[in-house]
Image 1 (cartoon, rainbow, N blue to C red):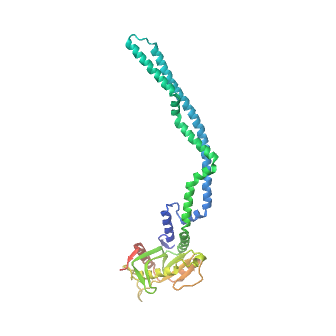
Image 2: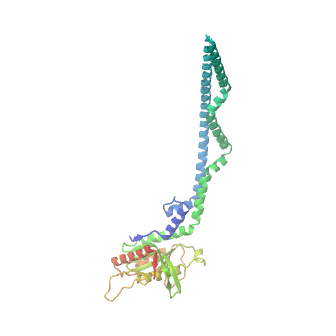
Image 3: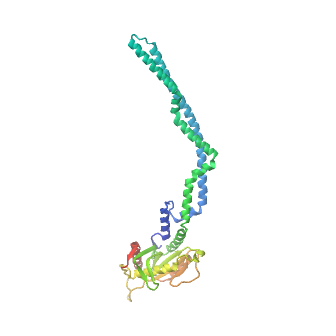
Length: 365
């Protein structure tokens, strides 16, 4: 099995866009695709779930209302009994006071004052009796009324209750769907790149696969042949093989996409990357030195082959310096070439390219 480095570019970009929109649900590309394909079912399941939740809430409210009704009556009875006992106690104290005969003027005045106080307390408690009972059970009544209103609403407006219940969850589900649909180009791209990676992983461990190679230059480098200033390059895959280096750009394009003039040419993209990699490997635009085993005839040439792998539709045309293949043709094409490098040399070339990739920006002057 080939040795693989880095996550595929489209998948990294897809994950980044999802996280920017606070979507962390998906652990793999398959989960994203499954979410899209099962959205209608998930939506209906969500609505059904909340229908059941509303029905459960209604049944629970019915039980709670009965319990509250009993609790209110019990609390009312207990409060009335306590207040009645307090009034009776005051009346008993008044009667006892009345039965006491004063022996002097001071005792008479004190007795009259005490009688007045008892009578005022009794009068106040009797006047506030209903109010005190109501205050004591008010929290239970408020709770009962709130639950009763909710119960009546659910019973009379089931669809609206479900709609309100599911609104937040449904909005979030539809938000995710809209965001993911807008990322379809990255999803299709990642799907195509995954197929290519899976195919290349079938190669032996003498092959090294580097995904999502990208590097920038400051200042831009000049390609005299194309009259092109290159500030940065990116390629889906670099396969370092015993027979040389394969630059691989994956396109999961439909026939309609092939005819779309607004889409950037992958031919131009891969040729720019090939030019840059040639410069890097030959120490023309970096300070890295790639030491390969010397041949007694002279320095070895590092062969760079440019491939575009179409995982959907392949154009009929042929292109200069770039080979366009289907996924089924990929391994056969790679295995056609005879090895020219040892395992140590391919490892050194791989390490060299990985260092370049990690650097991200190369100072060219």
